[in-house]
Image 1: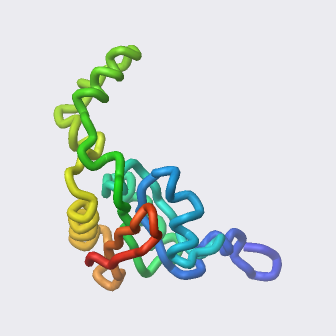
Image 2 (image 1 turned 45 degrees about the horizontal axis):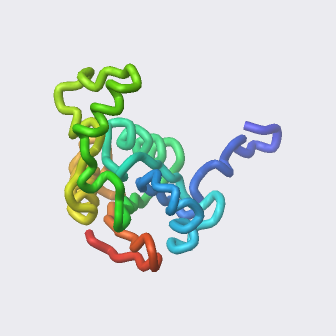
Length: 157
């Protein structure tokens, strides 16, 4: 706390009390914020390949809720996602070619985040978050998909 009794770093709290889980696709940089009407400081944004709800994404959501005051979660997928139909056999081959070991996990497809359908992936993510024991029931969780070309956002859940 500062000498004035203000919480130092309080400006890091999301102004819109929103946490967003989205894809790391470069086409979403600035585009997603613009289409969602987000400005600097409005939301906590968690990005990973395919906006997959992993333990790490859940950990970040827990921090956003309990430490930073998030009251709403948006899981945002997008059309034309590279993780939809990702060729995990090719990824493994490339890993081996470059000297890495893809056999560190028993379910590489799940670990890498392979999916078949962007919309179903968002819906599955919403259910995982809503039903996770660390996420309180008073936090709103919605699933959205953004058209990567037009920017149109559709609410799925």
